[in-house]
Structure formats: structure tokens, C-alpha cells
Image (cartoon, rainbow, N blue to C red):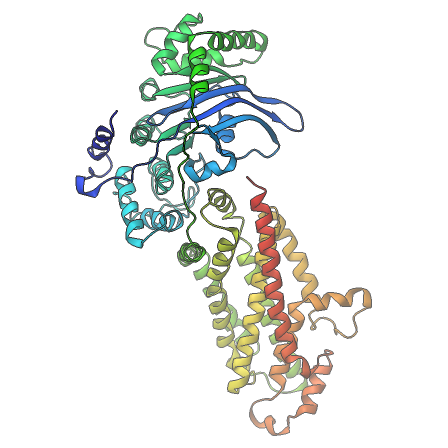
Length: 612
């Protein structure tokens, strides 16, 4: 098909999903054609040496939609992963994957898009919002260029009608339909305008109409000059005819490569004709399947078919084409956007998600309001007697505990929820781990500052804490450091732990140890040597000491004239605290924040980079 005809086809596609593109709107920029080929691929499981692919070769050309097909266990997903250099941990790979005759390895990411089967989005965002943020991560240039790219992709993939609908979370929050979600996956990849697009099971879970619409979208993408490969499981006959070429795998070997029409003739010549009015794809997949209790017969049949392909005309044509591929120029591919742009886009996404997550910000604020009133009423107008002093110290420690426990268990979901999306986008080359980590961490700071401030300000004057301007401001600063220490510790736990369950299991006991050595339950100066070292790792201890020093440096009311350094030191000495430690405590808590975030970042970077 000529380029002009291709553009005309794309520009005048019927408006099943929201209108046609006008000529003055243009389409995505043209791409340099890429021929993808693979030669003699051998893939084995490293530990067991089980063979997944055996001497598989093939070629996919620009302007073609190719389907990788086969029965379960045939090796189609392994082949796709090998081509895109993903999910190969624990596998040994031999052979060549060539882009215009050049071996690129993992650099193939720069010239390709990968629409994976699992749909991973930020469900609180609308379709347009999500694509706009994706464009900031994928497209270099002006904001106008990015928004134009978003508008074109929305129209071409039929997403205009749902562009202002929130994506939703399956089973939690209703959002866009399954077909729209699949097209949104393709839309994200097309923002980068890749010359090669890989798709893993694009029709899984869709009804026949939606499946056909998705394959039609892929066909239009391919016919615009791109190379499109997808794995697909038992398509209907009308879908099967939409593919330009198909690859059938069986037992990790190539059973056929050619057009759908050629496949029917090939299997007929191999002694397996397709019955009249029968779905050819179903017949071929059934022929290539290994049926339980008939393994020997099935494998003999598969071996015969694979040998017939290799020795036949189709196999010889493939071998000739692979030998005739000339080494050509490889397109530059997608450029990484500046790190500031990455961080801005990721912060925007995380902030919107936090704000629209009622279980996070609303629940946190309501909880802190209730706890502020509870503390204020429990210790309401506490008198400055010996019992009252003890009660005020108890209130101070309760504030430390409340700022710690609720913050840590609220933020410990920091990574597990996002981890699959982060892994995918990082290996797509959209951003660095540093950009994500800093942006996500900063997005939590406003929330986990405001809630603690609300609680402290509600209970402060109800209890009767010392209320000179300097003491109030100092108390706010100390509480901020306490909450941020807990926040950083929670982020660290979530990033270094292999799962959410492990992070929660570690969080409870660790906080118990830190709180027991925090100064209220046991005098820190009287702890046995084998346990006292824990206090130096506890922001409970530093936060409680700092709040106590600030509180008893001066007092309110009639007692203020009788209160002095001696009275302050007597109260502090009962906990083995020292008034000279005020600034040291704050500096140490700030240092803890930096240390926890550093460990968290290193843990996340290690896990993400090993996950390809």
C-alpha cells in the first residue's frame, strides 16, 4: 500500500468511537520502516535446562500485522518476551534478534512499544489526564506538541467519548470498559510513535465485538507503516482473516509462518485439511496441541508438521528472506525527557492520585481531627501538679505515637500498589528510579504534614501545653520531624520488603521496640546495656525528649513565675533527658529522614533493575 493510501485510510476510518480525523488535524508523524527478524532462537530454563524455544526463526515486515499463535505451552509468550528482551530472568537465550539487520539487545525498547496483557493504570485519573502525563514522559518538545499528540491518539483509537471518564480500578471503582482499557494501553504506546509495536494477548477478556474492534485498531496501526506483532489465543474466523501474517508455534518450534490463507493450504498439504465452515485457527491450534494421555502421538504429529514446514516451500522462502536481509540504518528511537520533566509529570500524577483517594486524605484528616479532640478531652486543662506533669508527659508521648503509627501504616502501601507499573515504565525507558522515588515521596509530604498539624493544633490549648509563640512553633517543627521520620521509615520498609505483607509484618514489631525504648515506658538511663542501644535508633526517644524540653522550658499561668531551670531539669531528669539536647534531637531526626529515604531509594533501585 502506498504511503498516501495509508494516510487516507487512517484519516477516513469510520467513527465507531468518536468521529473521523480531518485532513488538517494530520496523523502521527511518519516512522522509518523497521524489519524485525529473529534467527535460530534457543531459550532454556537455566536451572532445569528445560527447552522453551528450539531453533525458532522468523521475520516481521513494516505495514504488516503479525499474530503469534499456538496451543498453551507452545512458546508464543516466550518468543514475544525474547523479542522485546523482557521477563527473561532465569532463562538462557541463544540466537539473534535483528532490527533492520542490526542486533540491538535491550536497546530495542527505544524503537518499540510493548502493550502488555495486564492493564496497569492510575485508576483515579481520567483517560485524557493519564495520556497527558504519559505524553510528558514519552514526548520531547513543547507542551503544545504533546497535547496535539494526545488529541490525535485519542481520536485514532476511539477514546474521545471516554476522555473525561476516570479509568477506574477493577472490582473497586467502576470506570472505562474493557475494550476502552485495551485501546488506552495501545494509546500510551503510540504516544511515543514507535515503528514497532508488540502486544501480548490484546483480545483476552473481551467479547467478540470488542475483540474485533481491537484487532481492527491494530490493523490500522500496522497499515500506517509500522511493524505490529501480537500473541493471540484462538481468534474467531473473521479476526483470523484480519492478520497479514501468522506464526504458529508448537513444542517451542516453528510450525508455520505465512498468511492466514497460506496456512490453510499448508496444513492441507501436511495431511490436516480444514473442514468446511470450520474456524481455521481452531483447527490448526487443535492439530498442534499436546492432548493429555496422547502425548506420544501428538508430539509425533507436531514433529512431522514442523519438519514439513522446514523442508517445504514456505520454510525455504523464509530461509532465503532471512539471508537476504541487508544491514540498514536503525531509527534513533525515543529520547528520554529531561529529569525535571519526569519529576514534574510523576509528581502531578501522584498528587492527583493522593487527592482523589478518599481512603487516604479524607480518612487521614478525619482520623487526626478525632484523635486531636480525644487527646484534648482526655487531658483537658491538666493542672500543674505532680500527677498533672506526668499526665502532660503522657500526652506528649501519645502525640509522638499517634504521629508515628498512623503515618507509617498509612504510607506503607507506598510501593506495593505502584510497583508493577513502576517496573513496566522504568524498563520502557520513561523515567529513572530516582525521578519516581523523589516525586512519589514529595507527593506525600503535604498530606502527612497537614494531618499532624491539624491534630496538634486541635489538642494543644485544650490540654494546656505551654503556649508562648516560640514554644508553639517549636512544637510544630518537632511534630513535623516526628511524622516525616515515620513517613520515611514507612517508605523504606515498603521499598526493601518483597511484599506488602512482609512490610506490615516488620513494621509492627519494629515500632514496638522503638516505642518501648522511647522514654515513657522505661527510663532511658536505666536500660540494660544489651538493649539500651535501640534508643539511639528511635525517633520516639528523640521526639519525646524534644517535646518535653520544649514544654518544660517555660509554663503557662500562675506557675510561670515559680518555674525555672531547676524545675525543668527535675522533670527531665526523671526520664534521663537533658535540656541541652533540644537541637541535637532535631538534627538527629532530620538525619534519620535522609538515611531512611536513601536506604529506601537504594532498595527500590535494586529491585526494579533486577526485575526485567
